[in-house]
Every structure is written in structure tokens, then in C-alpha cells.
Image (tube, rainbow, N blue to C red; front, side):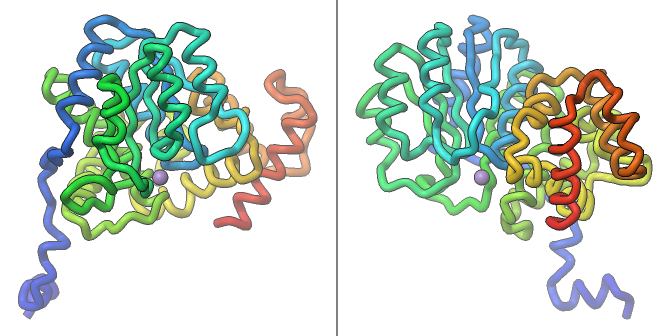
Length: 317
Ligand SMILES: [Mn+2]
């Protein structure tokens, strides 16, 4: 009996088979999709706020790219500023003073009730996508105002093992497929977030996201992920867990937030390719500091932080 037949006999082949993605039916999915539709059709001014970790960053990338694919052109991201795991009062301030119509909060914020109320009091609509425990219900959010649309996987009647990034993917993927927009690359961010938050990968939905991500055409892998890959690397648990995520984690933990803003939020690909090549240089010849110091992007402080980041990344991995 062959390997595959043996697995079949024990009932394990299901884990080797491709699972087709089916959109989960979140309680408030239609409300969230309706708000996304309004953002796109009115080109509303949107501020995205994401948590300070790999999952939060992947939420930001999925929401920003997804909205862009759908045609929204008035979308900003709150720059990482000071490490925290809740909604930043300064982000709320930015929404109010900047006349934003929407604030999309991902991977945090479920328990920041007074700040959510402040946004709503100022007429700013809120979309909240989270997977952290809360001690209130969906009704508690909407009783205050109908201008808030929430999906929190812990409030769903069905059990999910989703990262916030994967939740954002499920929402944006549904929005894109309803509008006939191809969004293959977004699944890569979703898979990164699933691994980064150690979500159960034998879960059926997560496996379908895995298959979506690992079968993305190489040319469609998002540029900010592709720039961290060499020609031999593929989207896999190995690449994500031992190469990509540790580097991002190290940047967060070293509070090297401006570097994350430059790489993933400003998204100036030409500059990012330069940064990436300096990253490679600084690992290949760490003693030849001149080439790095002479580069216009970096001050000496940057160089120092960069080395700290790499030493950190190495230890972490
Ligand atoms: Mn998370």
C-alpha cells in the first residue's frame, strides 16, 4: 500500500486536498459590505487604523489595497507612532480634524468604547473588524448609533479561528468578487496574518485561504512581500514563519516604527527596493558601513537602528 492509500485508510487525506474557499456568513457582513460600497461610490475620505503587530499590519495592507482595487481613492492609513494595542486617541483626533467620513479599525478597538462613541458623535462612520474578546454584544455597539458596523469573530454564533487579517480578507474578498474585481494577491497577506497569530491551520476556512495564497501567481504576490523574497523562496509557512514575520516583528518590538511606515504604509516601491537592497547589503557585509552611511535615505541613527533590528531579527528567528 502506498503512502497516499495509507493516509486514506486512516482518514487523513482530507488535509492534503485543496479546499475551495467559501465566504463565511458573518452576522454583520452585509452591513460592512454596504459601507464599503458607499465608500467606493462616494469616494469617501477614509482613515485606516491597524494594530501594532504583523496581523494589524496585514489588515492595513488588505484594507488599503482592497479599497484601491475597488476604486476608492481617498484612503489614508494612520502612521505607526507609539506602540500600543488599542485605538489611539490621536487617530480619532486625526479623523475629526481631517474631516474623515469613515474610520476603519482593525485587530483592536473593540473595547475602546468611549473613543468609538467620540468618532460617532462627530458623525464619522466606523467599521470595526476584530478578533479579540469583548464583554459587550453587537447590539451594544449599534444601540448607541447605527453608524457603526462591527464584525468581531468572538461575537459570532459560529466558532472561527481567524486572525484579524484573515477576517479583513474575507470581507474584502467578498466585496471584490461581488464587483467582479480580481484580488488574488490579498490572500498572501491573509495567510501571513494567520501564521503570525498562530491560528489553527487545520480549520477548513483557514485551509482554503492557505490554498488561495500558495497558488497565487508569482507576478501577483504583493510587491511589499515580494521584495522580501529571493528567487528561490515561495509563499509557504517556512518563508512566513522564519523569514518574513520575524523581521516585521523585530521592527515592531524594537519600536522601529518609521521603518515600517516607510516600507508598508508610504508604499513607495522604488524607495522600498532601495531599502531592501540596503537590508541585504547590511547582512552580507555588516562591517562595510560606508556604503550604507553614504546612502541618502539613512542617517547614522537609522544605520544604528538597522543593525539593532537585524541582530534582533536573528535572535528572534
Ligand atoms: Mn491579531
